Image (cartoon, rainbow, N blue to C red; front, side, top):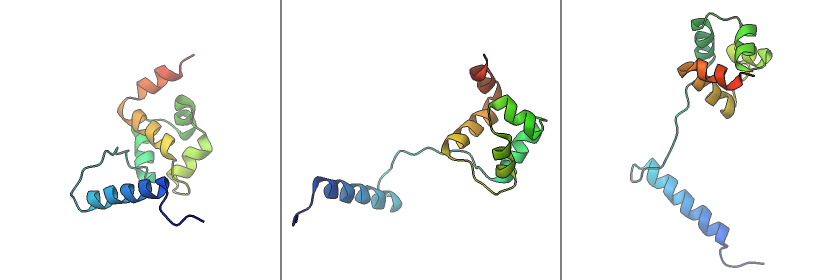
Length: 101
């Protein structure tokens, strides 16, 4: 049985100290903001492109059922999907080029 703190314990304590300092405004931590995955945002993105769900999914390599569930609020896109949706929103042709044969 260990009576002292382990290296992992010290690391966790230090990390929690950083988080508390950040919350208090005493420290700045690196972060990335990924666009809102709200259902309304995804619907608006697709409609702005004037694409049906099927065509949107086909064009950007997405599962049409996933797009439907995101738009209806039954599921939230995972982190990778949110990043892809952000790129689609900002530069859809970059995704098309990347997926081209």
